[in-house]
Image (cartoon, rainbow, N blue to C red):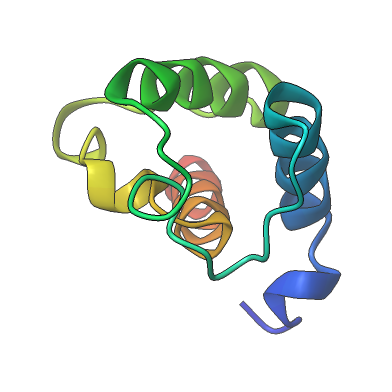
Length: 86
């Protein structure tokens, strides 16, 4: 990715989604599950959000919690999946 994550439109959308859902601010490098007390159920909500919002399919080995721990990791996942589809 050429632009810093903080300037990435995917990151902006994710941070806004997280703020709406949790009523907290989320730095792009904050571990959502270790520090925020979010659950694996919320991880599935993130999967649905990412798929619908960014028109990607997350399946198989991409369904690892590591891909959803931070905004940075989710941005990387979305960009990687978009590159595969292109």
